[in-house]
Length: 212
Image (cartoon, rainbow, N blue to C red):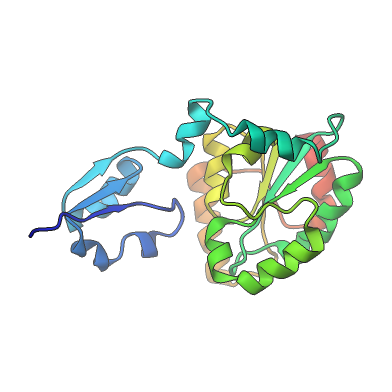
């Protein structure tokens, strides 16, 4: 019996992992759009489907019970800041997390680690969850959090594209101790997507938020 195999693109970030030679193993490749089609076409048949993770947001389909549950812990008089860091080499947790926690006096803080980080850093996640359980969301549901967010704060990962695509105000946090190769990569990347709200100094975060 023949088996028809299909692979669905899962990330907007890492070209190397998304477009490796193992793509030859599949009969059909489902990608987000033209940029990825050009990357994937050498492996065989492909089809552009958009990014399904945004379907609920654009159709205004939200899990109302989850949103109500989250809202119970929020001050309706404060704006909601959603911090979505990674836990990889670009992670800004050590540099910015304490400053973000301080902002609770003026803002509601929603905190969620990017999905790929959860799989690879379970021990680190448990530490964060124990320390920040009052506003740390570990469930793999970003739609409810984005719906509530007035501002997204993130480092390198899919959250960056989520915020841009969902038209959310954005502050991109960048470590100041990256290797030259990583810095050069980010500079080219920011130029390509015309991103200007980049911050390296935690002490300037509050002022940056107020400007936005």
